[in-house]
Image 1: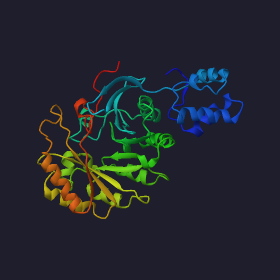
Image 2: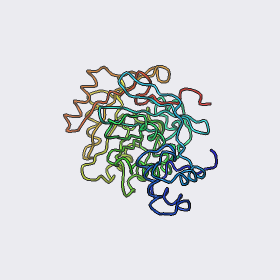
Image 3: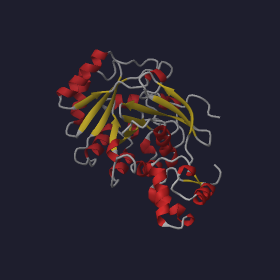
Image 4: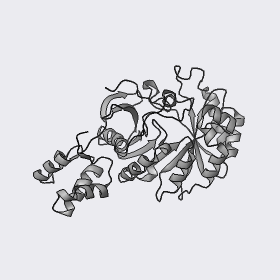
Length: 344
C-alpha cells in the first residue's frame, strides 16, 4: 500500500464524494465513478474524457488497486482458475466459467474457511482472514477484464473460498458495488447455514439470491460432515429459511453434495423432499468432487445412483438440477479451492 486511497470496492456515491475536492465540476465526479464502476477502468490514464491535469492529480491521491493475477489455469471445459495475491502476501483462488455469451464468476469471501466441512478442501486447509470489499470486488474486475467482448451477461456466485455470511461486514459493501453492474437477481450468496448471517441477509432492503448447503436430511448426519450444524442446528436453520423473505419468482437453492453410501439413498431423497416441503425451492444435486489427499475415504456415487436420487426429488415435486462441476481437472470444482502455492 502506498498511502493513496483505493477507489476499487467503493460504490459510485462514495467515489464521487471522495474525489469531490479534486474536481471543479460535479459531472467530473460522475464521470470518474462511471469509468471505475461501469467501464472497469484499470487506471486513471484511460479516462480520456477527463482533462490530463485532473487524471494526474487523481493518480497522485488515489489508486485502483486490484488483486495481482499470479496464475491462470484453464480447464479442458473452458473454465479458468485464478490464483490471486494481495499486498499482504495472502492468496486466494477464484473461478470463471464460460457458457457461450454467459459467464459465471465464483468469488471467494475469505482466504480459507473455518467452517470445516469434511468434503471440502478449503475447510480442510483451515481458516484465513476475511477479504475486504475491494478484494472481493477486485476478483470480479480482473476476471471480467480477461473475458472477450462476446460475453453479454455475468452471473456471480459466492461459492469460492470461505463462508460469506461470516464476513457480512465486508460482503455488504461489496454487494452494493457489484449490484451496480450485475443485477442482484444474478448474484447468489451460498452459506453452510450461519443463522445470524441468514437473518442479516433477510433484513437487507435489496437481497441477492440465497443458496444453502444442506447435504443431509437429518441433524445427525449433517453434523457429521458439517460441524457448524452443532452450533446452528438443522431445525433452527429450516425455521429461519421458512421465514426468509422471497420476492416474487425467487426461490431458495438447496445444495446437496452426494457422497457414496452416506447420503445418496432413495430414502434420503424422500426425507430431503419432506424437510424442505412448503419452501419455494430448487435443489442442486452435486456429485462429490473427490480429493484423495484431504478426504481419501469419500467417494462420488455412480451416475445411476445420482440419477435415481435426483428422480426421487423430482417425483416429490421439486425442481432439481444435477450439477456436474466444471474445472475438476484443474482442481477448480466445487469444494476444491485453496491457495496452492506460496504467494511471496
